[in-house]
Length: 201
Image (cartoon, rainbow, N blue to C red; front, side, top):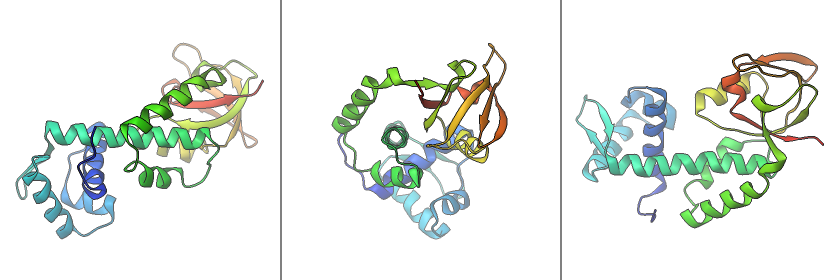
């Protein structure tokens, strides 16, 4: 996709896509809080986005992405998640989300494709937690999914760079039991499918 929007506009569209994924109704006060700006600034930007046919918006009414706005927002959200994975892949452990927020706007489609190809070549060394067996261990590289899943896993201590070992592998519907930092945790299979690790030999 040819870059035609400013990073500020892209950030709004990405945030609206996140809301849609999470089933949240977009509201001015929520956008102001999440983006760290005033409600007045949000209202002004929403008007601008509406004029560009990126959203459907009437003052005090619902905020909805147009097809064009959703396409741009999903592209930025996809690149954000890819950058988070790549940063984990190359060993970045701190401020991964913040770094991805900065880089997502600078990555062209060509660079995005190159990153995907590079990571795919190394995927044989990477495993999903849900598929690991008893006694296997590894280091968390990245977490796939929306902000809700990431927040839940971060609260459990499952962040990039964390060493874990499987104590009891998952059944078709059961959780994975792991040891992490001298503690034992049960991770539901759904969440375990979102955790990618570099597995020890």
